[in-house]
Image (tube, rainbow, N blue to C red; front, side):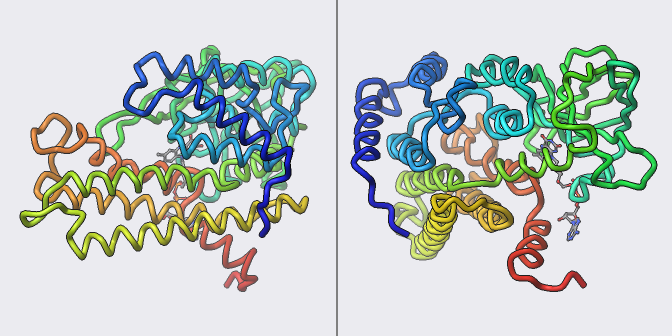
Length: 386
Ligand SMILES: Cc1cc2nc3c(=O)[nH]c(=O)nc-3n(C[C@H](O)[C@H](O)[C@H](O)COP(=O)(O)OP(=O)(O)OC[C@H]3O[C@@H](n4cnc5c(N)ncnc54)[C@H](O)[C@@H]3O)c2cc1C
């Protein structure tokens, strides 16, 4: 690994630092309107979708420049880039790889501008880990597809304008993977019904989605008919790729250390408790291991090689760490841990209680730890399946 910056990369890093000096107020001085203003400014610099090609409105930045940008922003605790999470994370990259020219022109600029949200319709009641067994049925009728079936656990379906959807176009059973097709569906299509599901923290962030004779124009198919599995594999690789997760974990760890300093345990600051200190140091060591793993992946990418199964290592690592950080946060709060937002002894307005109950999103969403272990065992370590 050699990450010495070239003169051009150093100049870019200085440009980012100058932009942050000029435009980013300290953490505590950012008002409620700041998020939207920040998005606009970062977008103007073409730093949203920075690595995407310039012809679709991206920044045309190199991989190393993208790393510099994210690194500098994370150090200054800047809000995340862009406001269309799934659009930026995997719908946009999939459109760039598989979309027609018309689809790229229609959707990519709106994703970069954060005009509306996208949701992801992959999982079904009987198909999660074994996604290729999905049954949502789709038949062709002239210039339209007709969709019937159900999706579940669809995050932010109730606030999204569009969905990236996987359907089964070949129902003969002959082609499990090759019978899947990817469609882009408007959420207000007639026959599409969203029913929110409550999660264990009491809020609703995902939903069941039902399709009854929903008509989708053929021009909204992403990739060829039967190519949906490849589109999805590429999309999930985008979801699991890179070192982005490290920054989020580091930020949470910093906040936890701060909480430990502010909280009391056995008559002294919790940060002085030897048991807790050991847990925090162990967590920090694991986060650092994750960063170094991310650097290994980056080295591979800089040499022009594609990432594949190895992204499962950090996905697994992050899942276990998120659970651990939540447990540490509750330990620091002692007898206030089982209380909820609004109760007087609860720290940070219940942020840590919500955090501790929010682990399914990062642990189960995008593939469970068991599935990541299977991938690591079979594809990286070459262990036999049985
Ligand atoms: C907060 C949250 C948000 C989500 N958002 C979305 C979304 O936006 N869109 C979407 O499409 N889906 C979403 N999901 C669904 C998620 O992708 C699935 O829940 C996940 O893939 C697991 O599938 P499943 O729930 O059917 O569990 P199952 O596949 O039934 O798994 C149940 C248990 O069996 C284990 N298991 C299954 N197969 C194997 C195997 N071969 N080897 C070893 N162990 C195995 C699993 O690890 C797990 O512990 C979300 C889930 C959550 C929790």
